[in-house]
View 1 (tube, rainbow, N blue to C red):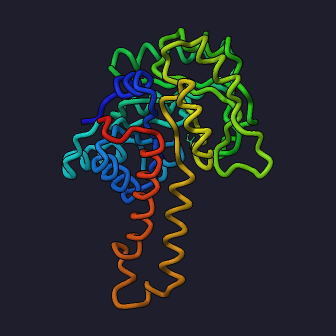
View 2 (view 1 turned 180 degrees about the horizontal axis):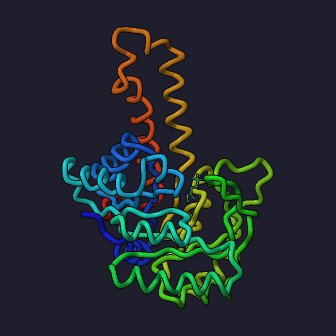
Length: 287
Ligand code: 13P
């Protein structure tokens, strides 16, 4: 059964580790992430962007697929199904469809409007026992056509949004979706520290987990980050493994064209990436 992300993130914050949010795109992605979480006895959050939701036919299809896998793969570790960077309408649609967690990304609205919309969604999420993530200060880079400017959050605004009763808070601290440029200045640990001081026990969320060096991840966790989002890294690993299979001509040998064979190296590559991240984040055996 899907669970809200509240309990797993409260435990993570108290235990000084982070739970990974891994974004899903299809059956192979979902199965790879769920099996890895079960093998490592780790809690996990499946992230679905609005674009990925559309790609997978809609939120109801996603809910049906994930619930079916939980049962038929005998997944017993805590799993949350979370809308990633949701719009106000998208958040409402996912609540209806049976997600267990939502993110409302109102970071592009003026702070008053972000607060008003977040407040309304907090009340709905609360009444349904769901977790809700809000965002202050856009995350840099591009994801599904939403371009962030690499903004850094204002700790006072973080406090205002945290006080609305959200479960977890994403705050821009110089992080970027996708690959980091050569000249990236790194995470703003001074800002993260100030945010944690103002928001106390609130689990903080680090977006753009792809390509952040291990020492920065560890430092971010020590400063209150309890949820780390990873998307691009699984995509790169999948593409790389699939390219190698085809370049080696394996799809032309025997029944190598069978999708169950053709997609297997990419599937294994996602598993390896998720395992590496769960070990780095410290969530192994925390289910
Ligand atoms: P990356 O694609 O950079 O890993 O970011 C993922 C993310 O933050 C999803 O919200």
